[in-house]
Length: 217
Image 1 (tube, helix red, strand yellow):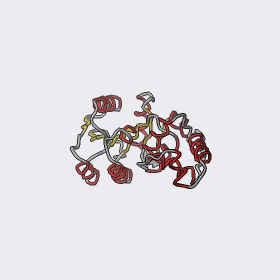
Image 2 (cartoon, helix red, strand yellow):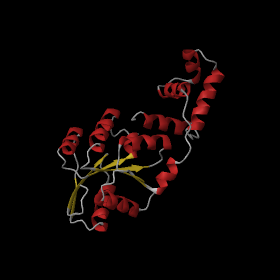
Image 3 (cartoon, helix red, strand yellow):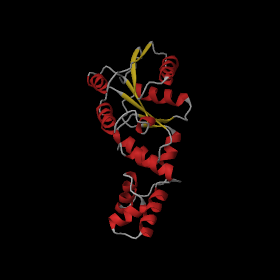
Image 4 (cartoon, rainbow, N blue to C red):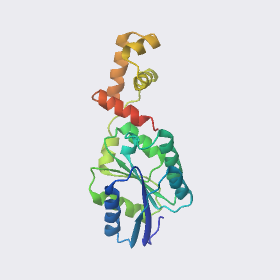
């Protein structure tokens, strides 16, 4: 869809329907002087994948909420990302909200074309789309606010630190992990604390949210 002719665009979203998607479509149409934007809703995952394969979609919106609100399973998210992000005909937009830099980097690695924050001004999206529609530059467009988030230092976790937090995700308590891995309770607590510090996680809720999001990558 990377062309100077902006007459008709088909757009969809990989999420549960929300009226904001209609508002986004109307805003894009008005600001970019596009003759017609059709916002398509697909009843099932296979219908969306077929549309991607047939190149009948120009823009797909991904919302970070779908990574942790139960809208889709991990395998479904992976399939749509793999199909759409590898299709040069489609512009993929990722709206990021409350995501740590480690997860944002993984989303960039997936190959999305545009990454903006839900806290960005609406014109940021228009600027990004105009760039992608009129140039052949394959570099991901990243808004300034997302760039600042990405620049947040994220030290690599050690294998044992990953092991501890993944066992926490599976429901193990620290004492159970210590018993399972034959380590001192103080060692397990330190590894958990070090992992959270490296990931800039302030509390248990942020840790659990991170682990749930991380499942999809």
